[in-house]
Image (cartoon, rainbow, N blue to C red; front, side):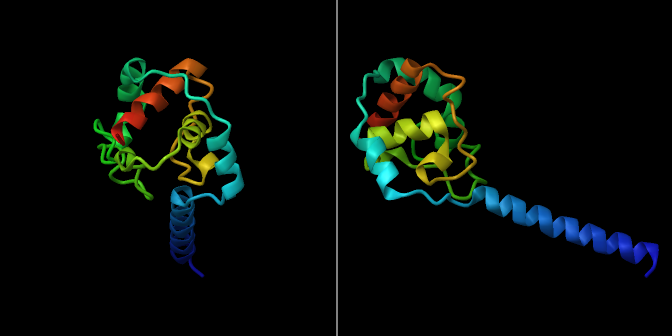
Length: 136
């Protein structure tokens, strides 16, 4: 083999490896229905929508859209697409778990980051209250 052929093979291999890694990031994690049901059953919403509006705009709207339809500019290239909150079918406990622990915690995309270390309990509660209003 020549050096050029070896470099070409290495480049193509690296390209495919990176492709598989990016595809894996967008895949949904396997999560048990029991964990998700538990998150929904044991949750008590104490947040207020009015208080959650600003943090939603800062941390969520880029991907989920200003109107919560999952059509924000940052979410257009994501697979799977960001959740559409206007359907009204997401339990508050599940939404809180996604906000605090990230998308993979509820069987969604790894691209949804956790905010449990950067937002307070009350701020996350307020964001959940705000997002639930999209589905009303």
